[in-house]
Amino acid sequence: MLLLCVESSCDETAAAVVRDGRQILSSVVASQVDVHALYGGVVPELASRHHLEAITPVIEQALDEAGVGIADVEGVAVTRGPGLVGALLVGLCAGKALAWARGIPVVGVHHIEGHILAHLLETELAFPFVALAVSGGHTHLYRVDGIGRYRLLGQTLDDAAGEAFDKVAKLLGLGYPGGAVIDRLAAEGNPDAIDFPRPMLKRKNLQFSFSGIKTAVMNHVRGRDELDQKAVRDIAASFQAAVVEVLVRKTLLAAEQEGIDRIVVAGGVACNSGLRRRFADLAGERELQVVFPSPRLCGDNAAMLGVAGDYYLDNGHASGLDCNALPVWPL
Ligand code: KG4
Ligand code: ZN
Image (cartoon, rainbow, N blue to C red; front, side):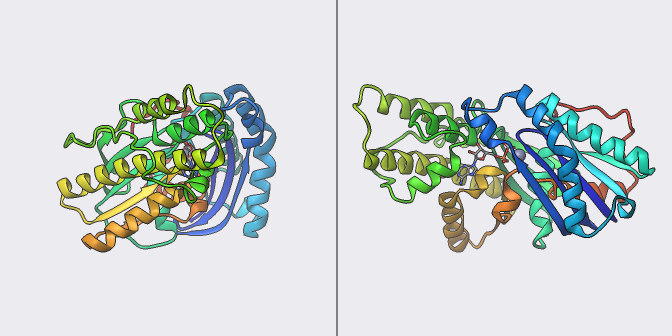
């Protein structure tokens, strides 16, 4: 099936054309990062307005780059939630309108379901696997037994890991969003310079907490004179090491508890080079298969919706045209 996929849950307007839930023919992402950077975070009202401006050109570009016309599209997959309601509505209404006009089915897909299945656009991986969904809004562990078959194993009790990266970056005056900047600076810093806490690590459960690390960084910085570049690099490296350690240990515990040796790490924070390296090392030591989507499929994009979208439409689970956006939607 030739699917048009549309994503607008946060600050990226994205459209993609995906064939049979496996082959990406095009993937266009228009980022609003520059707009929100001025305010140090996503401003929901501005996000909706910019989605509205971008949605039609982005869909047209995705069709053009795939070398297809709207008449060739056989179904539409669109993010239904979770996310900012005004932002979600723009993509959802565009997707439903196109489906209605063309008389083709549309399906609303869960954003995190998109993230944790994205790797299937690049590689084969058997079910079941343990998925760590780690982004600006999520730090969740799932057992995945098949498409549509997810069991939540654990999640953060407070901040998401990406949120912690962004808040620490703001604290260090590194701008928004901060994950990629911290990642870059961490590569030049000493990860052992400061012993930041590893929250929840001693507890043998699958819960996370990142607000404590953020506070520890704040306390470390408070009262110091201007930080020189070396100090900033060392804080970035030590903070990243603490977050990575917790993410990796808890994910390995989940895999062990479930008796599964396949792990998928997905979402924007899965771009993090320290996280990738640490998982790769442990995978070698423990004979685990750890899969990361390539960076373009880790951050928000529409192609990732194609895997579940194709499956649901193929199995007769289209959404009605009355399907509404769900800002909060447990997977
Ligand atoms: O999945 P995503 O694009 O959007 C959400 O659904 O939230 O994730 C965005 C998050 C942001 O918090 C951003 O700072 C973080 O992913 N991020 C990173 C890196 N690249 C993006 N965090 C750590 N290291 C990176 N290289
Ligand atoms: Zn996301």
